[in-house]
Length: 233
Ligand code: DX5
Ligand code: ZN
Image 1: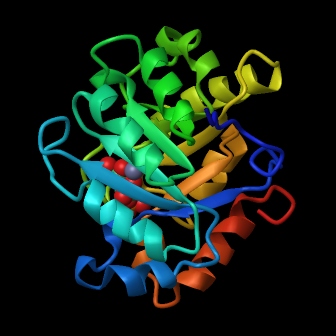
Image 2: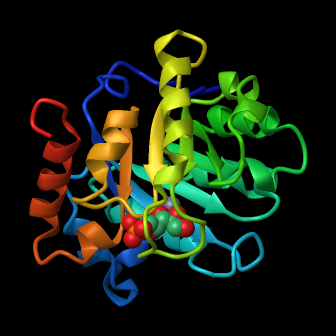
């Protein structure tokens, strides 16, 4: 049985940029994937019109994206009953599969175990209003923590700076050895907000409109990476 875990590449503490395909042109997915080839991860938002009021794409499309993507996939499942569907997104070859804590009907650790057994890193996502304290113990069985900095469902929303204390607390738990997770932020990340999120301690930065809304996504990725790097930011 393959069980995925964070490796030294993942914990190098260099900022990772994960463009969100949600802001891409869905009629030209293969081209849009190719435009962000120098990203660290490709963030794929799976929405079911139940957990969030929006519907995007499902496993067959994610499988097709995986087949053409030069970049590892970071699947963000905004769906109900993630325990049922999450392992399938790991099996198709994703690097990381994240489920929402609020959507899990049972113990999220069971989902983490199944995702890892299927070969991917396991991620837990928290909506802006969901306290980290409730999941500190559970997170010991996860590899990534996705802190939502907007309400999940749509791209192009304004960054919620009031969530930053949660990022700081997560960083503290990692730095003191209580948790071993990559801290990921998602929502409203752009050239004006990324430095705050980096300063609070995030490792992975999801950016949809800031990358796909740019004339040159490649340059936008490089600029975001610079702004998230303490020495340059
Ligand atoms: C929102 C999604 C995000 C979204 C981010 O529910 O989880 O990944 O695509 O888009 P921006 O960067 O435009 O806020
Ligand atoms: Zn997302």
